[in-house]
Structures are given as structure tokens and as C-alpha cells.
Length: 512
Image 1 (cartoon, helix red, strand yellow):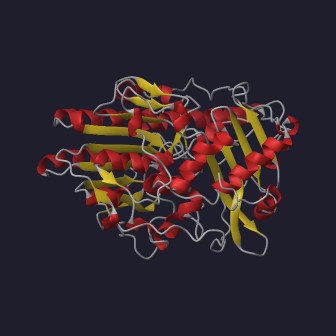
Image 2: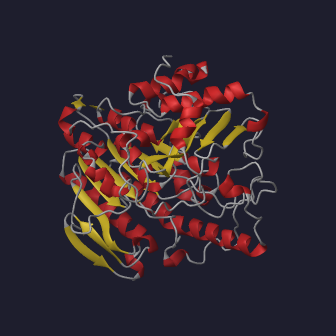
Image 3: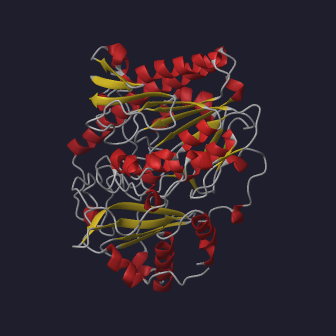
């Protein structure tokens, strides 16, 4: 590998700079435009190549908000397991490299790592829908690519943080032929919101039939049924607010699952966190009352997912009824994971630990064997856009960093040594001194065997996942410093990669 453009670990930490406040996740301070990256200008939709195809598949994509893969929430979703997991392909190591809402959602739409798409956080000016729009990036997403291929496209639910514009609440992003997204009100609570319905604002009240997930299910079903009136294939993106805080269940589920509690994983209320970063290291163990609060959060999250589970069954029933199921790919996932008491952390996200970066990802559809899974292959949300593009018969722009997952659909999986050897992680939100530069709060790399994380304060975490999957013992202090230096070098190279260079870097990780 050519390392001429790499920087030393000392210089890398100098770029990081400052002091980490890892527990301060809201990033509410307004920060100036990043000077570290100038961005990668997406090509126009017209520049994508559409492959001739007389029978393109339909695609139904269901994204939840803050749903975990490690906390057993999906175990309480019988329809998800019966109709998707048992009938489709599950990816067991599917990660979100930046485990917070807006950066992850942009990655799903563009196939780019956060340092390339530059939507660094949830809030403006360095994050949110406003930043995505300001960069002009909405001109080239999976929606515009599929529109170029003749798809009828529909979006329903949560788009990005801070959508829409305060002065233009009827704005519809490019590429979507049908659009239903909250423009104001309280959508996270499930009630009392106003939808932008294709440029018209419609108010919904506090009645049980107005519950957000149910409303999305109804509109999604109507979108599918209307496909019979149009010979075009469809791409439908349903984005729920569940199970995001305040974890509001549908009224009919408010008394469900009263006897469950948050999983008591090995790292739950961890005995010793002296080897963790500063934002965790000094946290006391939970009191009994705090543990009960965590259990309440878990119960509400499970309850709020019951309406999503019913939506899955409803939409599959509609697809079957209109003879569309056999030519439809159905995907289920989340924007990021969620921890519930691990390492003494109160319920939340944004950390590089397994609970936050690992999300469910399952797909069923033509050519996929029922009840199969892919393990020991590192995959992630950067792979969604190129996967959808290949399914739809579109060659996407060459700026994308991810790779298609379609080769996993058949019996012959890609050779493991030719697939991604390392999944980089990056979380932003830290301002470097007076320079006004947005720098990562941490960069990390997750492989099948270990997790390495370097924080802006210089703190390092290194976990042997083979012997310590719960990340209880940070072994950085007893690890060969030369190895840590090499990992740091790889991270500095990753931070400047884009497109094919990222994929090459991921594969060549083994050379370090």
C-alpha cells in the first residue's frame, strides 16, 4: 500500500485535538463548516448508467429508528421472524460506522462514509437535513438513481433530523414520486403531527387511529395497491419513528409485555469501567431505581415495535393479495443500534461498542434462500445503496464507498479473503481549538477478531472479540505498541479515502 499520504500517529492525534466529552451526545453547539474535507460532489442522476431490464423487481425498505440487534428486541416480533427472517437472508455482522441518526441515514441514501458525505451529526450547520441539502447531495441518491431506471418511488416517515425547512414545510426532495413525512408537530410521540403529503400539509390529532406507525402502514399499503395502476416497478422506503425515545407504543399495546426486562448482558452495569474512556470511567454503578428505569425503557421499546411488526404482516399480505410478493425484495433494518445499561451507560447510542454499531439487516426476495444467514463477513449501511442499485439494474456513481451485497444471495459466497477485512468507525462533533475544524471524537476499526478505537483525547481501546465479545477488558495497555501504531496509521489512511480507495483499504487491512 502507498503510505506516502499517511500521517503519523502523533500528527493524527494533533488533528483530533481537544478533550473528549463522549457522554455529551446531543452536539447542540453550532460549529462552523469543516475545513478538513471539501466533500465529494455527487454526480447528477442522469450520469448513472441504467442497465436494460424488462422485469425490474419491486423493493420495499423498512427502516426503524434506534432499533438494536444485540438487545433481543426483535425476538419479540413474531411477524418479522416468520415473514422475513425465516423466509430471507440475515446478515449477522451488519454495522453502522457512525451510529447516530442523520449521518447513518445519509449513508443509506448515498453509499458514502460520513467523512465523505459530510453530514457529520444530527444538528446544523455541520449536520442534519439542512447540511445535506446545502451540499446539493439530494441530487444523487438511491431515489434519483431508481427514478432514472423508471421506478415509482415513495418515501414515508422520518427523513432526517431538522427536516423540513422552517420557511418551506412542503419541500419534497428530488427523486420521490410520492412523499409523506412530518413537517411539524410531535411525530416522535406518535401523535399530534402534521404530514407533508406530496406538498400538502395534513394535520393528525391524538386519536388512536392517528398513531404514526399505523398511519405509515396504511399509506404504504395504499402505495403498493396503486402499483396495479402503473406498469412501473416501485421502490418504497418506510421509515418509522419507533422505537425512538419517548418510546410511545400504540394504545392497544400499552399493556403488552409487562413482565420483561432489559437483557442482563455480561457488560450490564459493569463492575469495573476503569479501563473505559473518560465519559464512562467515572460513572457509578446503577441504583436499583435506575435499573428499573432501564427496564421500563426496554419494555416501552418492545411495545412500540409491536405496531411495526403488525405493519410487516400487513404489507406482506397486501403484496400477496396483488400477486407482487414473488417479484419484491423486502429489507428490514435500523439506522443505528442502542445500548441499555451496558458499561454503566444509560439508554442511548453513538458509542463504538457492539450494542450501538450492530443493527439487524434481513432481506427476502427473488433468488434468496429462506432461513439463511451470513456470518463472519463485515457488512454495513454503506452497502445498502450499491445493493439496491444492482437489484434495480443501475450502475451507481463511482463516488460510493460501499459494495453490493447481491453476491451473498446465491449459494456461492464471495471468498472471505476477497471481502472487506475491516469495518471503519467514525463519530464526529468535536471542534478543534480556534481553527473551527470539525474533527472526529473517535475513529475506530471493527474486524471479525477485535475492536480498536482512538479518541480525540488520545485514549485508546483495544478488545479481543474472540475471547471478550462483551468488551469488558481493554487490553490496549498490554498490547504491542507497534501494533497500535499500525492500527492508528490505518485509521489516518481511512480518514482520507473515498470510493474505490476505501474498498481497497478495507481489503488490505490484513497487511497491517
